[in-house]
Amino acid sequence: MTDELTMLAPDDARADARPVWIVGGSASGVPAEVTAWLDASGFDVEAGAVALVPAADGVGVTGAAVALGDPSDPLALGALAAKLPAGDWYVANPDATDIGQATLGFCMGAYRFDRYRKAPAKRVRLVPDQAVDRARLEAVAGAVCLTRDLVNTPANDMGPAAIEAAARALAASHKAVVKVTAGEELIARKLPMIHAVGRASATPPRLIDMRWGKKSAPKLTLVGKGVSFDTGGLGIKPSGSMRNMKKDMGGAANVLGLAAMIMAMGLDVRLRVLIPAVENAIAGNALRPGDVYPTRKGLTVEIGHTDAEGRLVLADALALADEEEPDLIVDMATLTGAARVALGPDIVPFYTSDEALAGALAQASETERDPLWRMPLWQPYARNLSSTVADCANVTTDGFAGSVTAALFLRKFVSEKTPWLHLDMFAWTAKAKFHAPVGGEAQSIRALFAVLEDRYGAG
Image: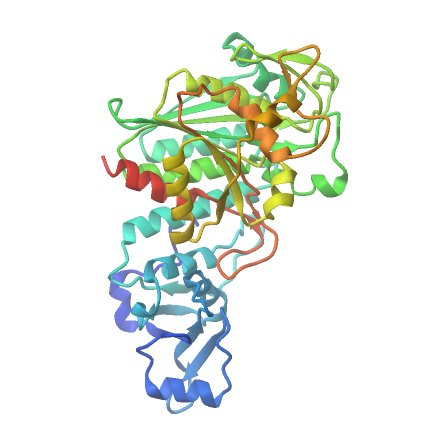
């Protein structure tokens, strides 16, 4: 799916494509005979409803109608992918909605993860409207598909080595350079936390380091949590909580998706992607509660809970990123259950001290329909990360404000002068939406790309 956007038809297919009309609300441009037929058939204009319009002679289908709801949600056009007959289609009244977002909604709704089962034979394609920037659409839709594919792939096929392979494949397609530090070399290269978290796995832990772009361009560094599977370590998770832990590399997957967009659209940045790729497994050499480890930053950390491992691997990666004094560091991680308690599965909390960045991201969240919400870096809570034997602990003892205190822990590893953004994501769709089937999800990267595109532009 990510190699070829098979949900989009070529522009020259429009002559043989059938029309789709957007109906309901203030939509215009719908033929009177279509409106009359919909009224006579009792069509309900709720979001995602689709009606097939029969030919005048009653043989076959001449077109279709889709409702985006009130208020209009252009991503509801994703419902067409499952409800239309096979063939090529086009939106006949594109002025009825944000046609760019609607076409993206169709592409996202057409996504299917079929690596382990036979793909459905039906093929529905949409011809993009001429007003749509097809190159950008393909970059964004392709990045969403890539992210979903990575998260959906189970840990037996998406361990640390496979995450590395995915990064190398993406790099090769954009002439980026990848270097990897793995196994015992992590200790020699002063990345002890990545080693400590991943050493119990049969697959060695590693730090993936990808670079792309002109050396003279502003430095943008993306850091993604790449825990390919999280048992919880010696503080083992209950089986129900462990069921979907293949998605604990969702931060890495989303970082690679965002990087794919940046490179495909040629933003004027010196891009660096850092992914600590590990499996939080259980063995005799697994890290223990009460252990104390050094970090690249020089701070020592007492392990309060082995299931708070993501922040540990991010700590070393963030410290390494900060040493280059980049223009911006963005980290993404499936970090805390507390974030889901606070905002649910759909809304990604973000943390930053950069007011301009926070404002731009909030605005892009609205325009891109990619839900984000700013949370506070409430410094008084940082004292709850104190330890009697080390510089800090990786968790608090009271259990309060878990997402906030996790962000405050990460803040210790980035200097105050470096602009930094942290996103605590779910990377999963638990209940199907018109534009998103159940499974791995790209969260926040569409909004982030819009901000970065506006800030840096093309090279």
